[in-house]
Image (cartoon, rainbow, N blue to C red):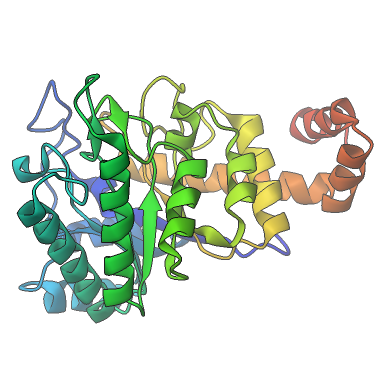
Length: 328
């Protein structure tokens, strides 16, 4: 991977119980944080982990959690604010019609930033899973959007030294998410006017939204603050091993990430319900490394020249030969 700066991270939830709505208790036994970290460090490619507030880390355990993580030789790539997993948010968090609930959501985000700082992490993630609607005539769309812009602007001002990363997703748990695409996430960034507001692309969410993720990354440009990597069949957020479905799309994504100078973490957001998490994580990382090597082998300049000539089949031929033999 000469010329690449691929810093790998993983969400600690990958090593948990991995429950779904049909088996809430999970397909595996729960694993203590110290044991999860041992499993993470068994893969020498991983440099950082992601956690969620307040489930994984909070004010009462942040010092202990930080000691365990940093003692294992790892950094904290991101702390996510949980604005989804409590019934108080069922009709929205930062966009709730209730000013009291919006204030509680804002306070949770600020508390997440406080904990992130204590862990030497400079960014928080906002996945607004409950902010949206399920039915026609359920939401006053202009007011909901205005409340979101106001809330994110306030948050960005209160935690000006922390990057606020907006993770978009088209649906689930609501049938329609308010921030449902890269374009809408970018619009939110621009309407806040805050330099510390940017976007997390979850590649699986991007697939669900019908996007070409490479194009989405280019659209965001310097507002692409973070990456969550996984794969799916586009109809649901399956969180499968990276590259298990969309091989060519990931190769193109890596090409464009290098083009636009992305230097953040390549963070794995996988949910191995039945598979061993170590194997899913290892295979995902090895796929990304191999895909980066393939781009290097074909050549950044060669790909650029073929694109400029509108010769997509020449690029596909070179990639095929690099993958299956014939390119030397």
